[in-house]
Image (cartoon, rainbow, N blue to C red; front, top):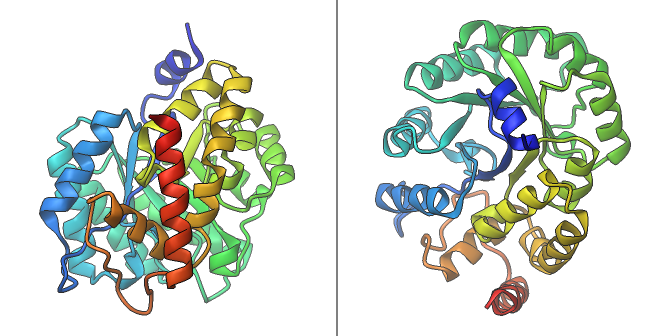
Length: 306
């Protein structure tokens, strides 16, 4: 039995492999493009993506209204129709709002929830314990914690993650610290059935090689088959092949993070016809030099695959 089969047998409620941090497509007037959303879901199903993380940071959740946020999750669940795992972003810096989002997402049929450390307010570790416990108490599906101190200004400690892992509904962590010492500590401290996802495309390979079960990926918006293949190589312990593929994708990965995400990935997706090149303020599209860099990197990586 492969690692993937073992995982699905022991922990079938959360996916193993490539989970796309899905962009939210907008029309030219800035409203949600529901037809393009459905096309993106189908694209990832056809590409072998293991799951869709919707209404997260890459999905511009901070610029969505509460109604749009809930409608986006509901529409994704409806169109996915059980064909792919749907992980709903339910993060907020107000615990009452985060609890309401968790209830709404779990009630509408999301398979799991993804909740970021509350941003700006800089809670203590005890505050994090209470915040995430309240969300998990309100949900009837697995909750995945999301630690990204570069955006939130608060770092959730390994000991806090361990304490939260005792909650029956808290079943995973997206770690976007980019710190491989941290990754080692997490693998050592947490039970093997606790899902550890890389939240950093630059360190997805070493994170998974250390024992992570997958990546929640921005790059997968543009190269869904390639990121899925990377995860499969690592799952089969084919590290030479994984390294080669990882290095091939690095130039595009750098380009996609050359400016604040998701501006670059939204522009790259528009080049592929996946969406209009539209983001909501205060986010903006990348500058002309970055656009040229993106076009060059995208052309090279697509030619390499031909």
